[in-house]
Amino acid sequence: RLGATLGMGNEDFSSFTVVEGGESGVWGRTEFAWRPAPWAGVGFLGDTDLGVGPRLEFNLTVPKTVLHLWGASVYDWRESRPSALFGFRADL
Image 1 (cartoon, rainbow, N blue to C red):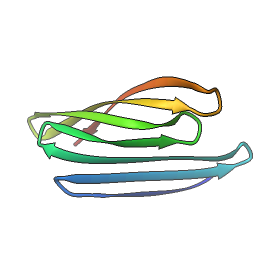
Image 2: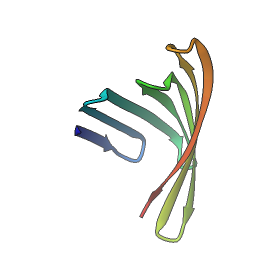
Image 3: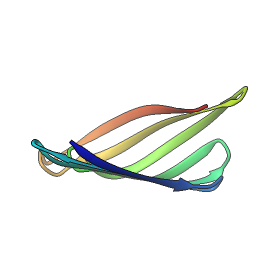
């Protein structure tokens, strides 16, 4: 497999995109978030396999670590149905 990743951001905005290709085809995901408050973010998530839709994020700060808890309500155009995604990320 061959892939590329691009991530950028600051305290208010962040964007992350990954694209991979190989024998099974091409896969990609992009996420964008705007943080109007240090503890919350709103944005967009698009995934070639899972769908596209709005994304919400809650940020918790523990000593020297920021935990990002997020969820997205996406529409899967291949299956013609809505779906939900949840995840977390830790900035160490």
